[in-house]
Length: 303
Image (cartoon, rainbow, N blue to C red; front, side, top):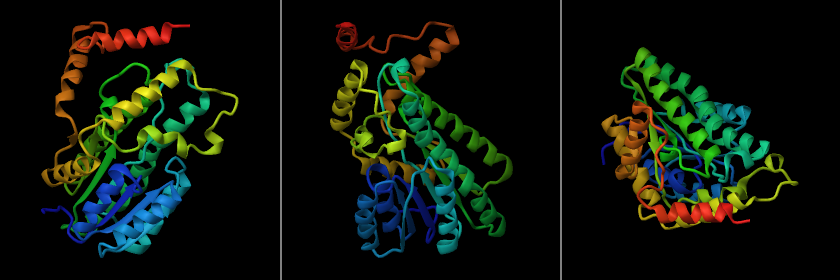
C-alpha cells in the first residue's frame, strides 16, 4: 500500500471508534506511530491496546478537543515522544438535531466547541510544528485532514446547529489549503465530507460533559424526531467506517483535497449552488421524496 509518510507519526482525534479507530488501524498497518486521542477513556484504552498489538508505538491521550489547553498538551506530548506528526486527523465530532431555535445555549456551545473549535485547536497546535519540520527537512511531507460532513455543503432541515459547525469546518479547511499553499509545498490540507456512515455519532449524547448539559431542558418534539431519523439513517448506512478511512488515505496519496464518501450526494450540492447563483429560494430538500417531507411536517405540526 502506498503511503505518503513511511515511518511517520499519525495524530488522530476521536480515535476510539468510527473513522478515527479505522484510520488508526490503517496507519498502524503502514508502520506509523499512532497518537490516539479520545474523550472516552475506557474505549480509548481498548482501542490503544488493539493498535499496539499491531506492532507499532502508540500514545493514548484522553482529552476533550473543545478545550484548548488539552489539545496543546496533546501537541506537546506528541512532539516530545515522536517529533512532528506527518498526519493529523482532526476527526472528533458530535451531533444534535432539532429545530434551530429550540437548541439551548449549552447545545450551541457543545457542538461548536467540539466540531469547530476542536478542529481549530488541532490546526493551531499542529500546523506550526509540521511547517517547522518541513523547513528543517526537505523530504518531510505532512497532511492535515479535518472531518466535516456533507452537512457542511448542504443544509438539511431539523439539524441546524450541526450544519453550522460543519459548514465552518469546510470553510476552515478550504482556507487552510489556500494558506498552506502560500508558504509551503510540503504540508497539505484535506476535508472529509461523509454522508450517513455507521460510526456511532448518533449516540453523541453519551459523551456530553456535565457542564454542557442543561438539566432544566427536556428534548423537544423536533429533537426527538431528529434523533429517531439519525438513528435510522446512520444505522442503515451501507458504506463502512473502514472504507471511508481508506478513502482518506487514498486522498492523501493523491493529494486530493475533498474526500467524499458518497459522490452521488454531490447532486444536492450542485442544486444548492444553482439556487445561490440564480438567486432562487432554497429548493425543497424533499423534492425527490415528498412523502418524507410530508411525514416530517405532519409530525412537527401535530400538537
